[in-house]
Image (cartoon, rainbow, N blue to C red; front, side, top):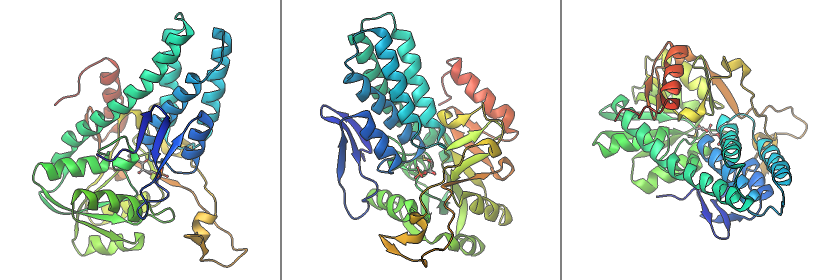
Amino acid sequence: MIQTLEWTKAGVRFLDQTKLPTEEVYVTCRSYQEVADVIRGMVVRGAPAIGVAAAMGIALGVESSRAQTLEEFERELHEICRVIGETRPTAVNLFWAIRRMQEKFQSLRACPLSKIRRGLVEEAQRMHVEDISINQAMGRHGAVLMPASGGVLTHCNAGALATCGYGTALGVVRAAVEQGKQLHVYADETRPFLQGARLTAWELVKDGIPTTVISDSMSGAMMRQGKIGAVIVGADRIAANGDVANKIGTYTVAVLAREHAIPFYVAAPLSTIDLLTPEGSQIPIEQRDPSEVTHIAGKPITPPGVEVENPAFDVTPARFVSAIVTEHGIARAPYEQSLTSLVRAAADGHRPPE
Ligand code: MRU
């Protein structure tokens, strides 16, 4: 399985996603500041992977803390969480992971500092293991939605590389293929960062799943030609009403899917559902460096001085979403009710249905 990120004795090791698909190189971070830099610089990206990277960054930070008292330790933890929390604003998994590490600290605060440090490192490692089984559960639930054969369109990378392994949207595709469905993935290249062309194509080709890369502007024509039976994407944050923030261009795909009566599915773990954000317009959208739009592989493609916009995400209104696949089952409209009851069932410790 692809090792997107990993806790090692030397530090947290990341497969450098800015170098794929031409180079398969790893970066080892030895401090929480370095982890913050790799999250901001997209060495690691994708909502669930960002969450676990954040937890591991916090673990690294507290492991090397020299604090002698609980007060000093708590101050350091607060600062580490602040730095990591300022890396990327849209994927709610980042804040979910920070909160989980803070809650773990609270549950251990009566213990000696050595035990608190060990407990936080173990919690981050547990989140890594859990993420993979969550994705496999999502795959089991979502596979039934995939057509028996034919084209499935995806946007950005919601695969093994965006998680600790297996993937969310691509986890559903993988599970369907494992069940014998004959799927052919159409991967939008996903301008400007090219996660589809570089990352989705890389991991699917590695797995032997038939894949065609198309430029973002081709998806409507592919749908019109009858090549696409379903769309499946991941999410960075899902508001309580089911509005979905995901990679820029997702909204366009959802509108096109509706026009062509093609189901539009979202696969995301419960940690991506943000019940505290009532609707999509309240989701903070990350604005990235204009050079991602004006340059390709370091070469300018626009005249100097032109104005540029580079929002990294857009919001797809819930009415375009046919279903949301989670590790606890499938949510359908009205999402206010279905998402709340899935999140509550999980919090009450109900096991997800097999
Ligand atoms: O900017 P990125 O590459 O972090 O954006 C990633 C996406 O938009 C993914 O679709 C989303 O995080 C879901 S990943 C399972």
